[in-house]
Image (tube, rainbow, N blue to C red; front, side, top):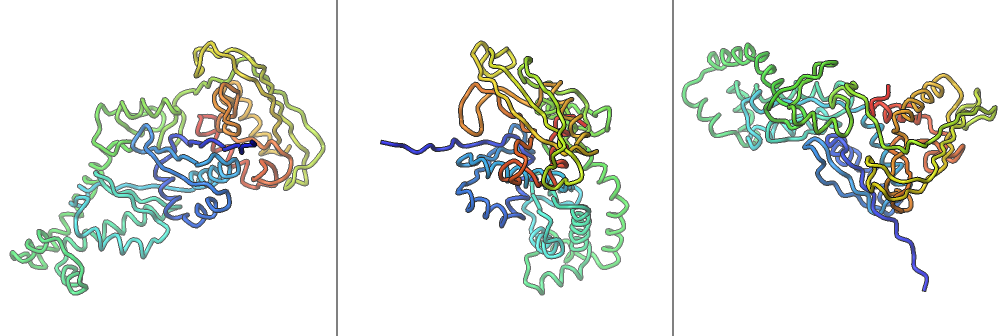
Amino acid sequence: MATGFTQPNHVFENLDRDIVEFMFKKMAKEIRNLKLFCSVDFQISDGILPSLCNVTLKPGNEVAKEEFMSLYDNEQAELQATHISWSDVNLHKGHCLLSRADTLISQKFPDVYQIKGSKGVRFVGKGKQPASALEEFRKIVHSQQSSGQSLKRTLSAGDDVCPKLLKSKENGKDEGESSKSKESNEDQKSSKENDSDEMCPICLCDFTEKYTLPNCKHAFCRECIDMASKIRPVCPICSKSYGTIVGNQPINANMTVNTTSGHLPGYPLCGTIEITYSIPSGIQGPEHPQPGMAYHGTMRIAYLPDNTEGNHVLQLLKRAFKQRLIFTVGVSRTTGIDNIVTWNDIHHKTSIRGGPINFGYPDPDYLKRVQDELKEKGIV
């Protein structure tokens, strides 16, 4: 009896949680279409750090993998995030004033996603919108805290008002006193912002053994940045490299480059760069998943446009290859076969044509995406 081949699940490990939550919230239509088109489902689970998560694709459909990572890469390049601690606005996570603030922010900034945590709230979106949403949030909360008129408007609208805040107004604070309180809050604004700077952006808690990166001066808990560096030695905030990543690509791998006069779809004015990777079979070393066991080699051909940007990407790929980052030894994401040489999350165009679905051209954003992927590994 013939049996069908079921593709194994695929796990995207340690993705930025803010980006993933933004995608599933604000790009629900694209995610839904991807699920319907490829007959797949997604499951989100915790990563090795609070700021990271894993996304399991069920099953590991190759087209769905490529499309999901394209969405993720595009959002990663464009999204910004800002954070404000509860202490900045004298609130806690369950405070009743937050409901009205949430509603007003959502109305004014529909493309910004709000994420509430135990220490504060983060605003995730594109361009300057997150920073603008944060300032608007601060104004809304301070206005409701310091203005008796705001309280009256809130009550007349039928919204809940914090009992403690209402009681403080009923105990004799007139508008003059409220104004003085507001001025006092403004005077303390800069010091409170400094207080928020005393929070680790990875764990979102107060610093424990604070460590400042020498190149970019961003600070983290020592334990948090040590764990993050095991994934990649770049700053989690600005992606500036502070170390050299060395992968576990087999040392007997070979990379050769040729050029042809043929044109890639979308690049009619230049020739084509042809990259050939050849990796013989061998025995896994101590840096591999199963030392001492044999692994199956591979040969892959990839294509770039022979123009200025294409040659720049080629030089970056050469550096990544020297640092053993292009390939790894493990489970094939396509076939599920173990102990095989496979790609290491730096996407290549292995077809000349066919578009992104067939790993080919035209794909106008590919060169930008692959540079972002290389940057994630410290190759800039």
